[in-house]
Image (cartoon, rainbow, N blue to C red; front, side):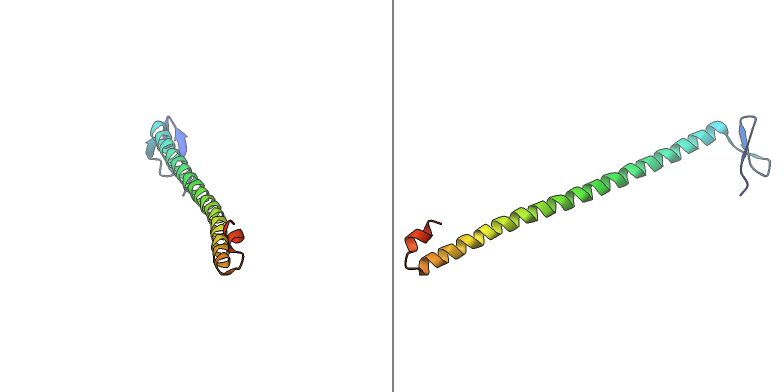
Length: 93
């Protein structure tokens, strides 16, 4: 495709026929750039949301793992206390 040429406030293609006025061209360009910027913002928002969700899930899993470990230790201590001879000392754990 041949480049368009500016001539008397209009854009002419290689055929010599006016296609768009410069104002229409600028409006179209601004519209396209607005769409591109909007798309970039949307993509950025999606990426940020995904990263935040992943970080939150990882942190929650680590916290849950810690509490699960505490729960298992308590259960084991309780079971051990029931079958142990000195149950009163271990039951306080």
